[in-house]
Image (cartoon, rainbow, N blue to C red; front, side, top):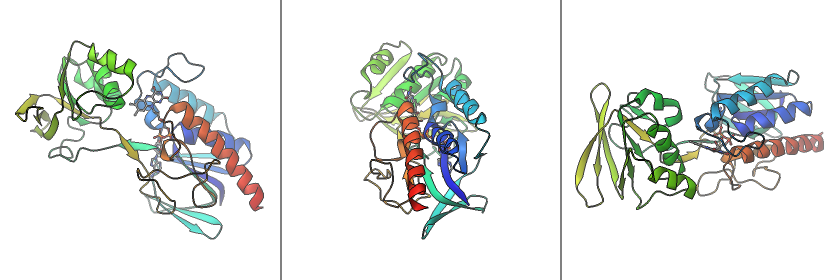
Length: 304
Ligand SMILES: Cc1cc2nc3c(=O)[nH]c(=O)nc-3n(C[C@H](O)[C@H](O)[C@H](O)COP(=O)(O)OP(=O)(O)OC[C@H]3O[C@@H](n4cnc5c(N)ncnc54)[C@H](O)[C@@H]3O)c2cc1C
């Protein structure tokens, strides 16, 4: 029986774990991978203490910090939680390999995961030209032509990352203009090797062994086939919480929390992008991880 199990090792979960272990709470941090969305960010320019750092480097710093916590903390990577149940005052978590974990409290810090387009060929060619992480996969497309589908911040991040390595990039966006941070948008629009298809719709990914292109419907209704070796699906993110049937959610599926980051279920907290509090940033997720950890400590003290 752990005092607290933290689900997800993004900035929220890793920070929460450092705090709960320092409070001498027997802590288990479980995660599918370490770093969360942070590893997908090229240039992080807004995490205090680092004027510029890549998401991958910042993840390493977080992991090094975790390794310094040698007492009261166990970290299990590559573990996916598939269900949570409440037993009067404790929690039972099922993980994918069939194991059951027990805790007096839980912090959900499972963040967000990429949305899919749901068009023909997307699943078939996933990993064979269809990708969701430009930061991770851009180097594979050196001097090649690629398409980025989407028009928000994640799409713009991908366009900038790819513009440095790919030969030509097609931006396919259902809206009239790119939407997101103005600074970002200006940079993207001034990049010479990007061709923009606004008010356009992705219809299907085509390929043989690998992707060969994307068919689209343009603003004027006409169809076009864009020859490309890669199709990056960058249409935003959705809460990664299909394992949680216990808590109340908002219309976007985010866990509703109070000012202590406690959900509708006593003892079950939610920190970072997974909750309905506004602000989806690394520093905010880390701050909420710290706050949820202190709230867990207070909750367990009261429960004694
Ligand atoms: C392309 C991109 C660029 C960005 N750039 C910036 C930036 O420059 N500056 C900035 O401040 N923010 C940036 N962000 C936003 C920032 O990365 C997020 O706000 C932040 O990572 C959220 O942290 P989190 O810990 O809440 O969740 P996440 O980072 O999403 O981490 C969630 C973790 O939970 C794990 N998980 C999910 N489901 C389960 C499960 N069932 N079982 C076990 N583990 C699970 C995941 O594997 C992951 O490790 C960017 C985001 C993206 C996508």
